[in-house]
Figure 1 (cartoon, rainbow, N blue to C red):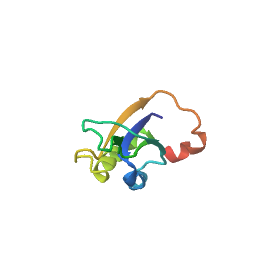
Figure 2 (figure 1 turned 180 degrees about the horizontal axis):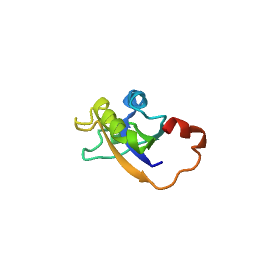
Figure 3 (figure 1 turned 135 degrees about the horizontal axis):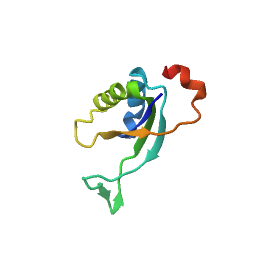
Figure 4 (figure 1 turned 120 degrees about the vertical axis):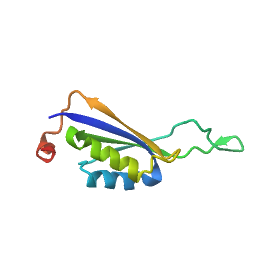
Amino acid sequence: MQFKVILASVKNNITDKIVDAAKNAGATGATIIQARGTGIREAKTFFGLSLEAQTDIIMFLLEQSVVDQVLETIGRVGEFDKPGTGIAFVLPVDQVIGLESQIDQFR
């Protein structure tokens, strides 16, 4: 069985919406990591204090056969075609342990 991981960086106000849509598209779960980042646009400041928006990194460990469908869903629901809404990418997974209780769901 082959696995891949999708990492999606999104504004925290749409995290739940993206996770729910990804589950409907075949993801079995997600790990959410709070983060902050910088991009091509400078962060807004107020009296010299940065007003960076909270960002979440959503990690989906997926069986390879559902990766394309989940990635497309994340991009569509998150409106990633609009500037500054989010980014997602796929990485290969060479080895996995700890999924023994979930293997039947992946089949």
